Image (cartoon, rainbow, N blue to C red; front, side, top):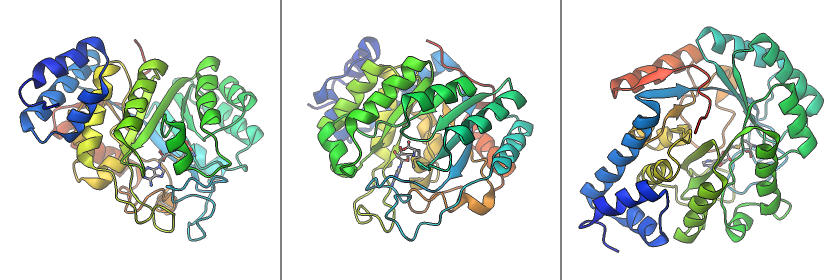
Length: 351
Ligand code: SAM
């Protein structure tokens, strides 16, 4: 399919139907027609602006542990990576990050980490309920991987509101090529459904350009998002991490990530869609471009600076040297420069 002649009606159709065919998806990813890409970009931005105005939500990210029991082939924190530096924040350090974040105006805290048994239900529920009591006006987002239904429920009861768990790929065969055999596609998907059933606002997502990704797997990702209707979708380019099996694999591209951000905005207009750090790592203005292609969330880092570089899921990650306040100011300035306004309010999902 050649987009260049008919791009406006094709893209209008995605916008109206909230659906896309595999042929159109393939054409969007393949085209080098500037007018088609610009129409896609401006349509996605228009849809985001209709819902959210020029507001971009800021979430404060706290990377609580670089220990992980999993061995995902793409990730720098995989357990077989003997060169990865491992740390875990103490309860007190996590509370300090929240306090710093709160003073900087953040009203969402995202606690993310590898799958680390140290953060068992007792410890994690204690942390969540302490933060919940101290900041009743804040949203608490967790991103701690696969846990049991009981664990997700206990964390929800302790006060967590949102959970980010990228599905990584909606193709079981592709999933099996990205993960060791002790991880299962079915369990990942069941976790997502469980989280939703419990009442979390749920985020799924995938890496763009992950090894063995094809147009078919991306099409399944898009169809999965259409069906699952998550409140959030996190996508960012795959970036190789040294000392992992995928260290020599090609990285994802900024172009494909931006086009997929736009497609996701068109098929799921109300979704909370971050412009990720990975996008900012591959392009000096990656996050700004993400916003211009329909993203409406950024996640400045609140983690203690002395551990930042050790949460090394991929190589050359940006924002590893700045204090939380600098990170916030820099993000805000970048966003203002392109005509948008940052908001630190909870920014809950609404249809
Ligand atoms: N352990 C939790 C989990 O599995 O959801 C949260 C941490 S995990 C490191 C967060 C996300 O980082 C993963 O879902 C994956 O998509 C992304 N990621 C891991 N390695 C990456 C890489 N090399 N390039 C880009 N993104 C990567």
